[in-house]
Length: 184
Picture 1 (cartoon, rainbow, N blue to C red):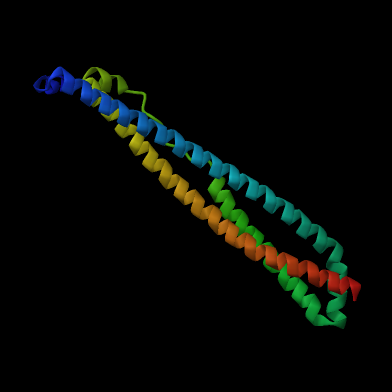
Picture 2 (tube, rainbow, N blue to C red):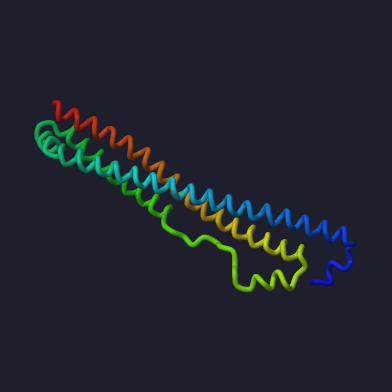
């Protein structure tokens, strides 16, 4: 490949090198930005995971202290007690589902990295512009893989948010019914 540039003038060779360097710099920057986006998404997933844990704790405490009221109200007025049990169960199911989505989103995945072995051949067996272009292609390919991982994780976190919305409403209704039962 070294003879490939012999058909070009020195000015054209320098132009090709400069263009390859621009492509290399751009693709490397994009790769780093994709990695950062993925890291931020994973951090967001961990925050959601923590929020779910707090809601689980609150649900367990409310259920524990409201269980006697719920069970005794079923004997007298069955509808509020059954509604509380259904809302509590739906809240728990929604939390489990949301937890499942978030857990799958934050699980560690091997992120694409730049190759180390054999990279010296890219630099020593090619012209500068071809070497830079080859490295740029490696960054572009890795960026595409990271974007796929990001999209998969974003989908799972989005599904988790949908479940959290459902769970939140079930939880609010559960608390209102428990409050109604305890005051009634």
